[in-house]
Image 1 (tube, rainbow, N blue to C red):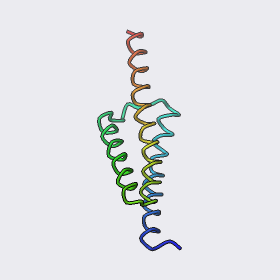
Image 2: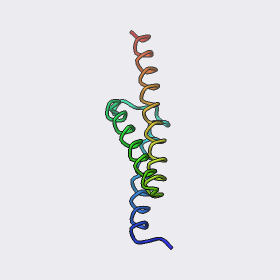
Image 3: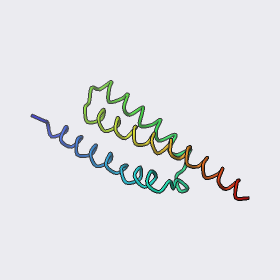
Length: 96
């Protein structure tokens, strides 16, 4: 049986993790990353990785699961920012 604090942790983890899916989908579908800040996503991804390590140290599954998924999504957005920005820059240079 889950404790009330575990239920709260899983609920919070689910909501904050689900919040990343629309952004990741939008970036992938539209190849539009112009409004994404590269430094912000880099620092954010690093922070999520540290939260994941913290969850591992505590052996807290809500923290581990949520931050594992969020880290994957944040890194995908970070990858798309780097990849799609360079493609956008190359196409802009070719048009000039």
